[in-house]
Every structure is written in C-alpha cells, then in structure tokens.
Image (tube, rainbow over all chains, first blue to last red; front, side, top):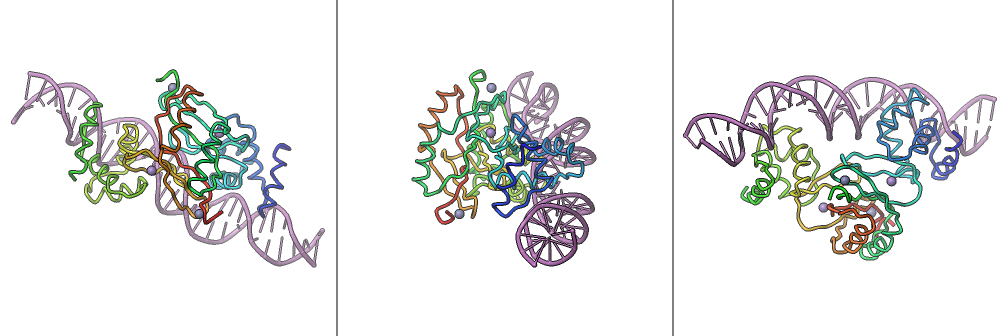
Amino acid sequence: MSCTGQYVPQLRARGYRMTPQRLVILHVLHHSKKHVSPSQVYELAKKDLPGLTEPTVYRTLEFLAENGLARSSQQKNGHIAYEIAGHEHHHLVCRVCGREAEVDHALLKSMYKKLESESGYQLTDSHLTFFGLCPRCQ
Amino acid sequence: MSCTGQYVPQLRARGYRMTPQRLVILHVLHHSKKHVSPSQVYELAKKDLPGLTEPTVYRTLEFLAENGLARSSQQKNGHIAYEIAGHEHHHLVCRVCGREAEVDHALLKSMYKKLESESGYQLTDSHLTFFGLCPRCQ
DNA sequence: TATGTTATTATAAAAACTTGCAATAAGGAA
DNA sequence: TTCCTTATTGCAAGTTTTTATAATAACATA
Ligand SMILES: [Mn+2]
Ligand SMILES: [Mn+2]
Ligand SMILES: [Zn+2]
Ligand SMILES: [Zn+2]
C-alpha cells in the first residue's frame, strides 16, 4: 500500500494523524475506478483491516472530503458516494437509466468566476452532479 | 388549506391521485420559508393528519420531487431537504458558517446550454448547491 | 526509548431511512 | 350511488447512518 504514503504529509501539515484505518480507506478510494458508497468502502476496507467499524468509515470519509483528499457526490438515489481527489470534474446522470458522463471543470470555469464575483462567495467545491436525460432516454 | 388545491390537476393529469397525506405535505412545503428535512415535514404534517407515518412522508417527498411539485437539495451535512417548486434557483452554502445565498438560474443558463450541447444530455434539474466560503469566512 | 497529550477509534445505543406486503381508499365507470 | 380497479397507505421489520463516550494509540517531546 505504498500508493497511500503520499497522503501522510498532507494530514500532518494540518495537525492530523495518519492511522491504519485512514490508510486502508484511502487505499480503497485510490484503487476504485468510480464513486463508492460508504458501505462498499466498509466491505472492501474490512478485508485489509478486520477490526474496522462502520462509524469509523463514515467519519473518515467525511474527514477526508473536508480535507481535500477525497470528494463526495450525490447519487441518483440521493445517497452520498466518494472518490479519491484527482482532476476537477463534474457529473451528468440520467434520471431514467442512470447513465453517467463526466464533464471537465474547464467547461464551467467561467461560470464559476461569474458566480464568485456576483455573490462574493469563494467556491471551494468543484464536483457537481447534474441530473437530466441522456441522449438515448430523451 | 385552499393553497394546495392548485396541485390536484397536476397530479390527475399524470394519472396520480390526490390524497390527504399529499395535501398536508404540500401544505407544509408551501408554507415553509426554507428547505425542510423529511423529519421536519413529518413533525409538522402530523399535526394536521395524526395518522401520518414516516414511510409515507419519505415516499411522498420523493414522489413530489419526481413530478415537479417539489425540489430536493443537498444540505451541508449531506442530507436531502425539500422545498415547494417555485422559481428556478440555486444555492451557495458556506462550508464554515453555513450562511446561504440564493442565485437565480438566469446566471447559469448559458452554461447549462453549453453543457447540453457538449454532452447531448438534456438537463432537467435546476437546483444546485455550491459549497464555498462566504465573504465573512474567507 | 520512555512519557504525556490529545486525536482517533470501537462500542453500544439511538435515530434516520428503506422495504415488502396486506389493507385501504381515490376516483373512473356503470 | 354503488361497484371496481389499482394507486396509495400503514404496519412491521430491516438496514443504514449518527451520536455519545470511554478506551486506545499516534506522535511530539524529552
Ligand atoms: Mn467524480
Ligand atoms: Mn432552493
Ligand atoms: Zn438514460
Ligand atoms: Zn461563512
């Protein structure tokens, strides 16, 4: 699990600690191709760390998202799923069949700027989910 | 509760029925100034319809959102809250203090168009939540 | 290496949310 | 009005998510 070593200094710099629980959860996120639900993370991470508990998974995922190591997103069923933080992007999800498409943040950048200057808010989050109808379901 | 009579034909037209449960929940949404959680809706609606149950509230809120009478939105805690469908708008929420600001959909309209033409998706939902830092918390 | 501080965890319990199914009742037709 | 179809609800049970708290362990310091 050397792939997760890179995250240690990111936490230390903020005064947080690295733990086996966080390492194993980061490992799961790091190797997941798509968004994973807390229960999926729990099932996968438990294999490497049998003592792991569900409350820890929920707390850790939220913690990682708050600190920029993970990203959360709303699924079609309303539940939250997570992924490791990588390039900035957004998602399109079909309300009918669930088909997903990814959108690069570049496409929304000017709108974000406009939104920031209009509102005075500084937008930290760049991981939206847009719901609609995919080409096949229209 | 005459304020909710307007919704009857909208449901009938789609082959659905109006019920006391739906009326009372619509009534709660109609008079709520801001987004309300399912449990808040349950507590308020129960006063007017004591037999009302929680599963009905959850199912009804989802049903109303699917049929355009209500809108759902993601809260800072990740939970879903609802409001009566009105003018198209989006929300800005401060990650630190929770302060909210509303954004008219007009500001995003051109970006939505671009997104639709780029992706082929037809965007049905116009009720996003942007997270960031409010002017005071930056 | 040994110690102290305190961030983090497991545990247990509660609260929130979902599901399957039988009973009910909305509303169209006679 | 009465009957019929079936959308909708309540009930009971299950699952998921949250919360409080005491025990644990990361890691800074000596
Ligand atoms: Mn993503
Ligand atoms: Mn809103
Ligand atoms: Zn589709
Ligand atoms: Zn703020």
